[in-house]
Length: 331
Image (cartoon, rainbow, N blue to C red; front, side, top):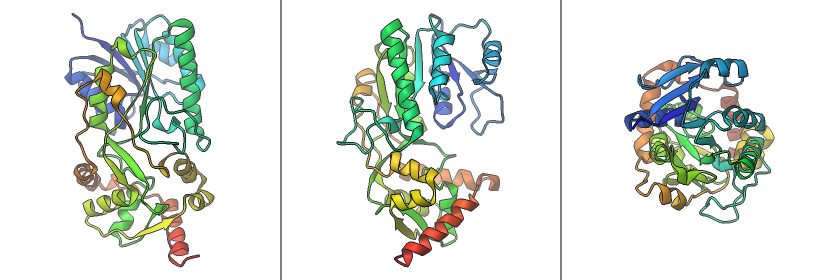
């Protein structure tokens, strides 16, 4: 029996690279279509790289040629036109098409937790999420009207050793190491679910080629639920620092920085806990095992290995100074 042939459109991101490694380990024949740029996360030698620009139909056609695939996973589809192009390109040619959506499509703020796949989709705060909802709606229609074999996957906040899982990224760690204050939205007690990419892969790879997934949506998350205060304290401890946290209301942050504000009001300012029962109905042995306490030292060590990885956002650093000064003084 020949190995399942899987095309990852993208494939070298935080989540997709972990899935590439596990898919190869489990004997799948994996292809990755990307532009061939230097990869922060190298892929296994067994992955066949197809060089092309996913946004250029001519380049895509040249890269794919006459190859046939059992499964196509698009890790980099964000807007309706991206999905429309895939439906046209892969209609009648594949057994399963997996769209990577986002858990931020769920009702924001949620009316109840834990969140399940039947939680309404509605996010008035974040255009990114509304675009993902539009993509999902189109794929559901394609499945219902023409049998297009769509599957929707909704990751939540997923990270690996290259990604500091907070909006400020390495800037926050650097500030804490320098003894400076860091901003945490609200009072820092909202609950947040963090999922390591290797855990995500354990839930995702078994779905590849599964006929039980067609026409369905699944989120894949861990049960590692922390407050934002705890997340910042764990990062500080991993970096050998003492956290000095200044709490700033999310709407105030949004007034100073609309991009950060959209991400907060449309996602991370609200407590989110997930029920993974639906995933376990298809992958019964799924369990996430990597905690942030375990992963944080690896994140810091990876950044410390190479100073070029320690990217500090000067504008965000200055904004934190301004916010900390204002709210420390009670203004």
